[in-house]
Length: 284
Length: 299
Image (tube, rainbow over all chains, first blue to last red; front, side, top):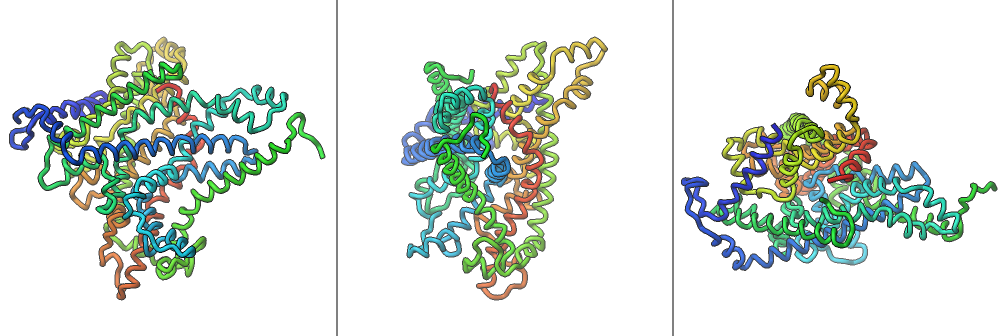
C-alpha cells in the first residue's frame, strides 16, 4: 500500500511532467495534446520575469541558509554549559514552542506586530520619534522579515540535534582538558565544536540540497502587491501561473516547476560530491 | 567554602558563565515575549489593544475576543474539520509509515535496496505542483475530505526514521526465536515490534499531527466548499487577508469599536488555534531527542 501511494502520488506526477513539453489542453488530455518541445522553457528563459525570479529564489534561500545555520549551534553550545537544570529546561521548552505554531499564525503575528497603525513595533519606534513604517509593504525589508521570523520559529527545534550531539561527547575529554588548565571558552573551541562538526556538515548538506525548496507556503502568505518585487520566487510564480491566473497555462507552469526541480537535484548531487571530496561526511 | 574537587571556576570561566546566562535570558525573552503579548492582548479590552496600552499583562481584562470567536459559525466548523483531518490523517500516516518502514527494516527482505531507492529518490526529485494537482484531480478527490488525507499519507523522511529505529532497537534474534515458535510476520509486528516502539510512534505521530493541524496550502488548492475548510484556511482569511466579515463582530455599532474588536478577535483566534498543540507537546517532548537523533544517524 505505501508503495502504491509512492507510485501514484510521487512518480505519477513525475510522469505528468511531460506536459511541460506539450501544449496541454484539457479537452485533449495529457496524451492527446500536441508536442511543443522546449518552447515553454525558452519562453520562460526569455521572459522578463526570469532573472528576477531566479535571483529572488536564490537570495531568499542563501539568506535563510546562512542565518539559520549558526544560531542553533550557538544556542546549543550555550545551553550545554548551563548547570541550572531548571533554567535549561525552561529555555528549551520555550524555544521549541514556536515550531508548533502554524505558518498562518506566524505570518498573522508579523502582520499584527508590524502594522503601521496598531502594531507594537511601530509604537516602540514612535518613542524614538520614528515615523510609522509599513514593514510589510517595504520590498527591501521583505527578505529580512522572512528570515528573521524563520529563525525565531526554528532555532529551538534545530538546536535539539546539536544538544544531543554535545551530550554524546566523551566526558573524559573535558576532564582531561580541565586538568590541563583549559577554561570553558577553550574547551568549547577545541572539544565541543569539533565534536558537533560532522553533524553540522550533514545538516548543511541537507539544507543546501533543499535550497530550491524555499518556504513557499510562508512566502506566499507574506506576499502583497507592494513587496512582490523581492518576494516573488519560482514556486509562487508556478502556483500563480498554473492554478490562480485566469488564463491557466498548465504546460508553462509545469515547465517552470520542472526547471526548478532539475536545478535542485543537480545542486544536491554537486554538494554531496564536494563534501565527499573534502573528506567530510556525505549522505550516501 | 568547600571546593568542588578539581573543577574550580577560574575568573574567565565565571565571566563566561555570566555572559552565557545573560545571552540565554535575552534569547528566552525574544522568543517568549511575542507569545505572552498575544495571550495578554487576547484577554484585554479592544480599546486597550488599539491604543497600544498592552505591554505585558492584560489591560482592562475582558473576554470579548473569545466571545466573538466562539459565536462564529465558520470558525467552529473549521475547528471541527481540523480536528477530524488531524486525527484521521495522523492515523492513516502512522499505519502507512509502519507498513513501509517495517519491511524495509528487515534484512531478509529481497530487493530491499531497490525499494529503498524508490522511496528515497522522491525526496530528491519531486513531481511538482501542477502535475500533482492533476493526479488528485484525476482521482476525483478535489473538493472531498480525501484531498486532505490521501496526498499527504506518507512522508519518506519519517519512514526512514522509523526504519532506522526498527533496525537498531529490535534484535534480530527476537525474530528468529518467534519464527521458530511459528509466529507469522504480521503477528510479530503487532505483538513484538510495535510494543517496543512506543517512543518513536509518539514522535512520528506528533510530527504528522502538527503537519495536519497546520496545513493550509492543500486545503487552499484542493477545497472549494467552505463547509470543508480547515481552521488554518479561515485563519488565513482573517489574519492575513484581513477579511473579517461584519456579522462576525455581532452588534457593535461604531466604526472604531468595530476596528478594535477586529484586532481583538485576531489575537483570541491565534490563541484558540495554537493552544491545542502547545498543550500536547510537553508530554511528547521527552521523546524528541531520541526521535530526532535516530533520524540523523543515517539518512
